[in-house]
Image (cartoon, rainbow, N blue to C red; front, side, top):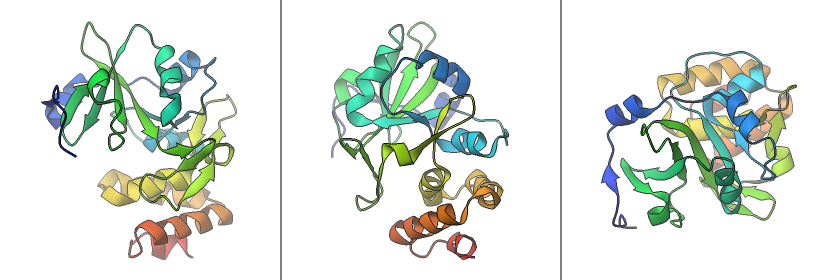
Length: 209
């Protein structure tokens, strides 16, 4: 799809400069009354799963069913939202309906600082649909676990499936660190998902053992 009017380029340097991420506990406090099935995603989710902080995080990502994004936005009325994709940033009002754009950054309207990235994900009612492959689905109660303090996070096999595409050094490190914590069932699920989306992925030699 062509880029809608109203967008502008944003470089990685500018994005890094403008990001000051919140922590999962801060977001969980703000969303305590939210009824949407949201969860921490990305590297932070793996830290919540393993119970230890592995590294500094440049951002904070959460996931939510696309139709429930207004419930998330309602919990942050003093902030504004931008849609981001392929190095372009748009106001949410301009690009929020585009199905091919899912990243939504929360912005302080006074400082321009970004604090939170919300992934608006495809779903069928209460069932998550993986945007990388529509054959991969899971009911939200199975997709989301929670820490002993009640912070919801995406199951590690889903986080690692998304990290498998880029395979940046931090993604490989996250995989190696998380793998020993996975149950046999979680390894089997990750193996199936990786085989479906990335059938020749190097991680498969580890998940299948």
